[in-house]
Length: 404
Image 1: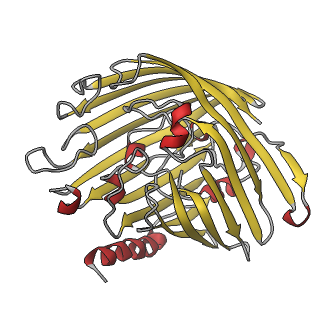
Image 2: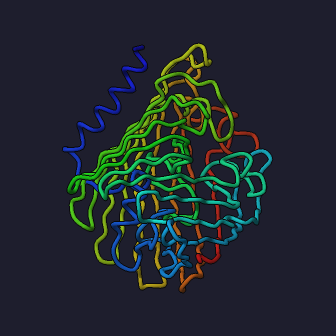
Image 3: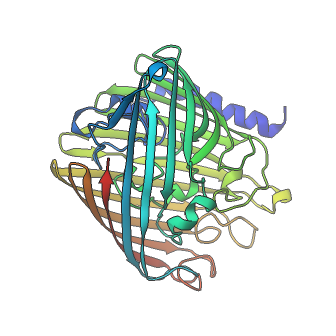
């Protein structure tokens, strides 16, 4: 076994070994199923997929369902939403003002029995801080296609299951699509993470401990050279902590918008906490990533990122919540040593603040959003704005739609 393969094996072993040290149930992206099944109160999702953060938007509590013989009860849910925004210092090809559909998706699934399934289909956009916006009409082709997620799940017992197909990632503290999170846009740390991967995943629960192990194609590369795992422990029904780790045990030369070359050859580690106290919901997380040197891929020097994000919300009442996110991320390396650019040039850093007032009445919702990104130690041509030399960006955004 090569050194890289040993290193990836060590990542997974360390994940499982640390299960006893951390107190969890489901990180924001590390246990989609656990969030849907274990969330309590009015924010509980009636079906496990797609997962939605407790303290943000609330899924339709009475989804359409059908009795389909051996498949049992099959649920049909979905979302239709649009967004509009203004931004300062747009990237080349982007615009100051934008209006677009953010989601036009349906979700079909069953949740009981030996054989279960989930299918997600439609159009979507994936707005993220500090990056150019790609409209929904192009996002399907650029990212994960008109069927962004879908899998078969074999569940021989309540505590063990195996999933195969296009899976939601275990990595990170935020979900992929706008409606799943506290905020409309994904954050700076999310820009270092994958979103959807093709592969297989095994899940096992014993008491308060939840473990998952996945073999997959990382950043949607169609090269099955990634392994990752998550270890989680439930403190109580309101407090969880999770540790997640993953890495590419080979080198992969694929480079697309969905498969960024540097990140797809990295290792990623997360420590994620989620908690609720009355009207408060908080989900801070720590993230470390590392891209090893690889002359064959043009990576002449290794580079890493270290980041921290605090996300959460306060519910003034059932219909109105105020969500916010603050985060900071920094990277190593320099232009002189040939390190890759992971943020806004080798050795750069960035911080952000996002505030998202949210109104929801039954299946209708509307959210406003203010976000600010500041960048430091940037490299000209790699930063913000039309010439890649600006060091800040403001966005004012509105999203509205229906969760049915």
